[in-house]
Picture (spheres, helix red, strand yellow):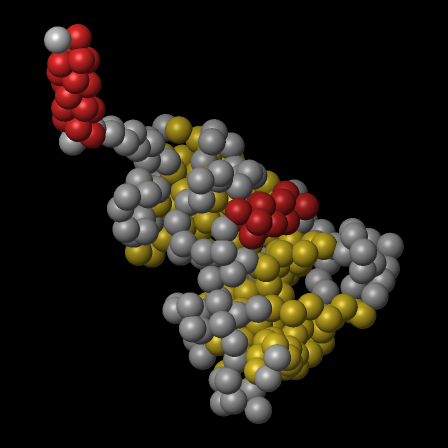
Length: 270
């Protein structure tokens, strides 16, 4: 009799266990509120300067950021000049053509519904991108071609750089940022590993057209791009990373405001 009771208890326990395994648990995923995103650039090129303003979206949605319309956008420099940017397309504010000047500090002020957002950036002296060539890496019996950029780093000056790589008009998903901590005053070769739209687009091929833009950036902007490069390989358009890089814009805004110089080179892969 005692054995039957033990058997019955064991049978009930197993039944309860099976039922508990079949229970559906609904997990509620909290999504953060949309945040303001500002992407502003002032360059030393005589061109239309652009400030873009949008809203972030939850990571569960597509990376299409809604534009922010109707903002008041103003840029000043430390010499007393002022430029009022107008909304050329929804969320895109432009002025120009005009060029920024190295050594000057530019301040951005954005007013949206009586909320003010500010940022400052000092344009460094220009460093020239000297040349591009192809760096060949050998992996067993396979060879892989990658872009290599060459420049001369000025001695005795702290310099920071960002590179923008495009292959056949497609911008690499990687973020490239470096400083001269270990290369001060040297002739610097830096390899820019390509990451295209697809996982297979990770090397150069004969006939590819390569465009490289080298930007000389200030320390805060270097921190932004360097942090982003360490957190994600998605690069521009890849969405907001789990840990957002430190912005130089006030009031917890995402994005950056950068005054930088530009040097460009092109190459046909042979």
